[in-house]
Image: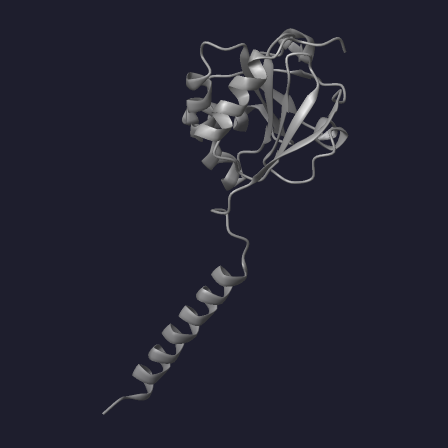
Length: 184
């Protein structure tokens, strides 16, 4: 015979499972791949931000290199999930004129340093504490990335998490790196 307590427990467990499945079904998936799109060639907005050591950095430092500018935050799970792929991309592009800068959006320095250390991020991290640069670049979702050619012009935009070390993306970046820089 099933007691009232057992019925309540079974109902609560079933209701909890239905609720959990509903939330998972309705929630946006962090496993969905982002989209890397070619865009009309254009000069990017200004970018001048401090890095984790307090040094002011800007895009001129990367002249002549293909540059991946990745906007991210430590609370953004898709951002965190794509970081190992960015690190592998850096390794795959080691012999090409290529660089990555990560732009942390809206977080404090201590939190960013902890995340950088934990993820072993081995590229410059800039701090956009007030999110003004993020907004100025027209970004509205994290992660968002911009690929600049050797002349410093935006060529591709990635919205959402990208598998940066995918063979087709590496090949596209290598081809971009082989193009001679044009006048700005």
